[in-house]
Image (cartoon, rainbow, N blue to C red; front, side, top):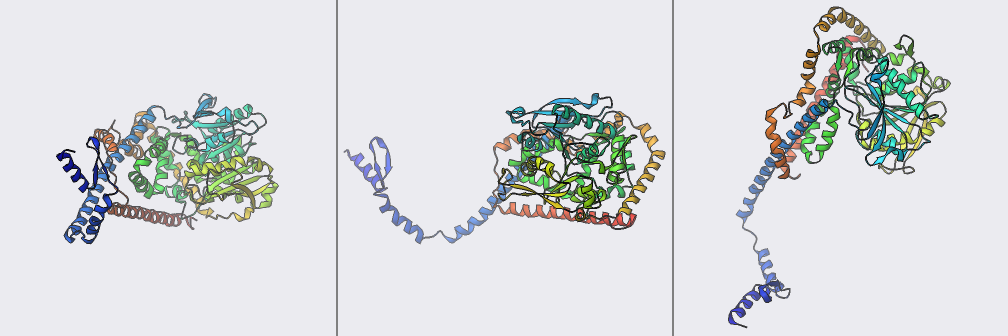
Length: 608
């Protein structure tokens, strides 16, 4: 071996490596331990100097602060970009006519706008779920299901805007599934009777398509009492009626969970509804109704919802935008329709009392209902608590014997925690409670007349389980056990005040406002509504300051440097966020308690 190569080999060996032909090297397992052991021992015996360890701590804190600032700057850009996209979605959806955001393919069966008594409703038949044809899941032995969404300010679609929904469960269980939608604008002078006439036609059409099998009506929120009106009118219904979060006893409630029932009394009755409808040129903007819902929980509206998106925007973006596409689709109601709803139901409570007239030839009497009823309510619902969903039963049937004598079967199902919207949109609720209801339709028909509580036992804890992993039983209850007392005389005073104020408004103010209102002023009134304006201001189509956000967002998304959960500044921010939410919730409690006291002062008695 030449001298230079021998020297290189010796040098390599001293470093713990063996030279290979061609100039490559590999670690020598024989030589490495012998050389490495003394080195590790020396490192252990000679720790780093103290000044260097103290200098590392400020560097770590500085690094955390820098990472926190970068992460929050990036999140701010991406958060604003999500608000920009929500605003654009709202404007685009409105330009497209606000079609129902159903996650299913469908065909239109009937369009009530073409009826002799027109209404802005249509009946759809669900034909396909993604890659699956609805006919492939159909079980001809099962009754069809008609799902009706609430007309309470939003558009339709909440019962089927994702696969695991009421529509999805009905298809999964083999039912021919129909969905009732409504359009953004009501027909001219549309009345509540026109709407009920259209719904009656829809039920008749579905019945004719499935002879011998009475349709199951699935009513969400306000659509629940609409289905009840059909069941209680002159013709009645034959199939099961399921009412999800549906108020029938409007004066009942609890001071801790249902402040909305006091709104009619504190606002002086229905005259405000008439005023808003007159300013809208004969139509009430659904954004006003949505604003009432938003005001119920200021902590969630003003902080929690947005802060959750800010902190989880990497995973929450699509879910947030999907929901907001429905939440920001505000639909209108005709003056005649909304006034009838407010005066007869919310303030007059005439449905529970059996004095509500649909038209000159027919009135509603809940004692006429003969088809089985399923009432699904939740203790976590602050819009329609169990008080309003169930308290009509002892009013109509004072005793269990009276209920049995009438030959009626009423089943109620209570959830302990889910909120109002969760009854319709929660995936876990759809997979368990709604599936259990649909699977138990045959058991309902076999029940003897009486009152029952539906109990679901699911020891697995998995909402996507199947029978017999979970079981359903119907426990008989007594009507006398339902006790949600309320000061009836106080609410009767509210009704009287409302009628007097409505009379004064119609005589003194309404003629002037209706004379001045026109389509242009109504459109301006609509565009300037806070619920629309607060969202639209983030659109880059209207706000040029959002154009840089749109340009920066894609670059920021690809260069994310998120701060880890152990960052002290992130923890401090989280504690500050909890304090803000707690302060807003304290404000809500103070506001609601003050409303209860004011109602008691004005109308006497306690509101609960």
